[in-house]
Length: 328
Image 1 (spheres, rainbow, N blue to C red):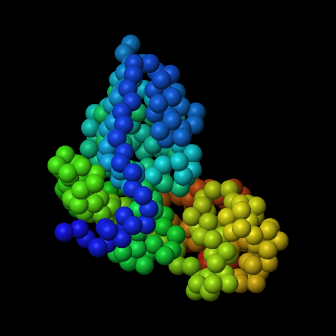
Image 2: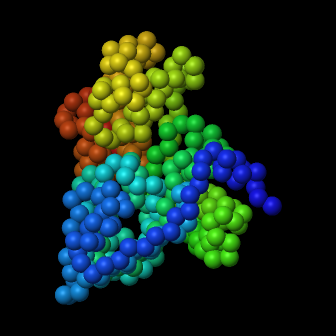
């Protein structure tokens, strides 16, 4: 018997089956095919030891797909902001590396990592066999909402955080259930629907989302458009954000956006953005410990280019300087 929660999920939108394969033996077609799947930018590919071939398969539906990417050769490129679903990936052979905001980290064999979800990131992989699970963002939000109230607030993930080893066995079980459901019943079966939700729940446990508590005043119906702008700030705080961006998201004029922030928060939109960024830096410094050079790296990641002005703003907001927070 299907879970009522699953039935409710299916009622919200049409869920389309997904099944496709691309393959070839030329670097230019790999860039075209694979870059097209991920809306990639500045992609390039070259042979390895005189050989080049690739194969990419996907099966599932528009909410969850199981994928496999294999290549003899090297491919690299960049993913623009928001270009992919929530993606968990791991390689079993070859090499891989992710890059975000100038920081790089390797993809270790058989160790799940999460693609950065809301920031531009780069990658390079070579001679690899890679598995991926794609989760539709709205589907994950609904699963999260069924578990807690976290989905009522903007969710953000730290892609540098590795998978919790204690949960990896559950992840393997979820993958087995997904594969079995597709093999036995296909993407229209109750078993597949159940397996999807279980996999999304394990994903949320393996890479716990962080969330920001939004001010209660945003629950008022009159502030619905302002809430959209505030949610955008919280979701994109590490990126360049302009008042024009907030205007488009909220469906308000630039002047109305400015007036709304003044009316509700008594600050300008960009001051509100700066406060959110300072809060994010504060959170990271509390977790970082006394590491040399950490303050500047973290501040730059959150958009503070002038460290002197950043330090003064930080002290004004938290009553201590960043290095004092780092030494706690």
